[in-house]
Picture 1 (cartoon, one colour):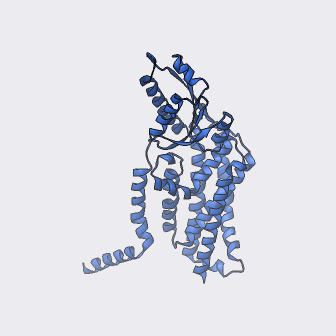
Picture 2: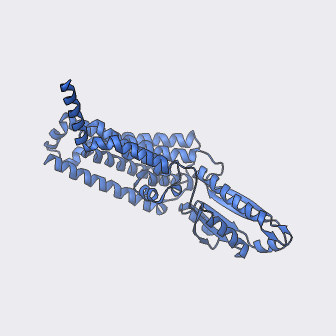
Picture 3: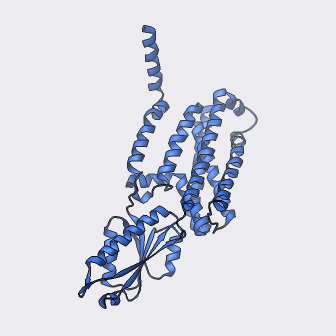
Length: 367
């Protein structure tokens, strides 16, 4: 019996001494609780909205103020002409636009029915439906309680979904799944493979061979780069020909951005393998670092604007967030590299950072 207690004590000692094991045991459940508690919400707050007020009356300003004070909307700016609408939607700077036609106040004063147009970015269909409902309800409440002379104001709301008029779920599903699959397959498989090499001792043998570190790393990851790119092409083909996704932009640009994202995913896998010693730890770290943040914090399922401020800032380090915006921008909105230069440079910077960190860690381990 004493031997059993000694053995149990020894196991506790090994677990408590290994910080990575403690991180897996306590970090993952804590992260899940925080993500499920804060990120998983269907309520939308502080969605960016633009207002095109061609009437500039006290009534149009009152409706705009009611929308902005509701907590659902945050003003991105006032537009001066209808030509600005398309550009601001393509840049992804707003989720909703409110258009007041000329003569809005005159129709009010004469008791005529007037119209307000609501434009929603339906590349995120659930968000677009919810925001359209919020805005319509606020405007209708204003119309029901406001009086112009002896009768309530009558407002007709004309809603239009931009980029996804039929509200197809594939427009949201395909970019998100593509980002998640490419990131997980590329990063996880690379990290596990390199960790297995270190477990068996073959990695150290390779490091003392005539090949340099970069050649060894590239030789290990190129097969995964090719396979992941094929995987991405298959997802694109299914999305376009089976699920009805449009291809409004440049296909070559989309493929190039896909290769960049795969390269970034591989660099993350290399970095994970450089700080772990076993396949199991590499797998759990990949799941903890990549899977949950990609699902919950990339904007794939839940709108980032609805999350607490600290999670909104944290989402800026999630690679999938930028790739999803790139895929939607090219396929759905038909925009070019000039609109996506920020996202592209961020992905390039992340890939370079992880490669440099990985090479430094591997060099330290060999020396």
